[in-house]
Length: 111
Length: 113
Image (cartoon, rainbow over all chains, first blue to last red):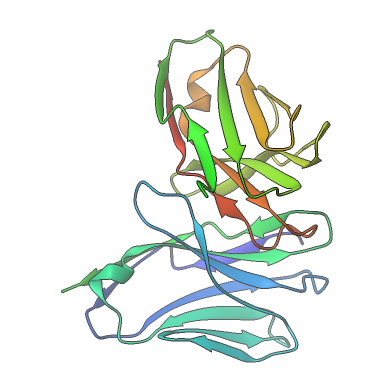
């Protein structure tokens, strides 16, 4: 019940296309859902986050869609660029100082 | 601000050797974390600390020890390295007590032969 399931494991998208990464959870006590972006050889960095009382949050080309009833949330990258090639992690927060992490999605944007 | 720094960046050990990984942060964060990252496994929490002098076990603590003697430093020790500990290790710190926003270091790539 503490898991966050992330899919797909890897994704290849053409430049200019829309990249979509999905996450699902079971524990309804989760109350904060961040996405982290990790470039090769670097540590992850917070990209965008959402709370469950909001259905969508947009920051530039990055949008989180949140479906509370389905217990799913997704990251959409519009007009995907080669510079977006990275590993993306979804996560969920509960009250014990920790984040519960998804397994990660390796995104490759082809020029 | 340097943010979160980790030393060393790379290390090769032989089975049974010991080593300490150092994490330092200059953001005055209370909460610090050690993760390991393996292909297809995501980030797995080894140990974490909610303040100077306090540590707690995460998801995969076996074979590791930690210490937080100073607020800005969090040390990860391997007493007797095993090949299964070959991984990339990341340290992170957080200013909030839910660990929601975590700032990561650049990682240490450890190989145990």
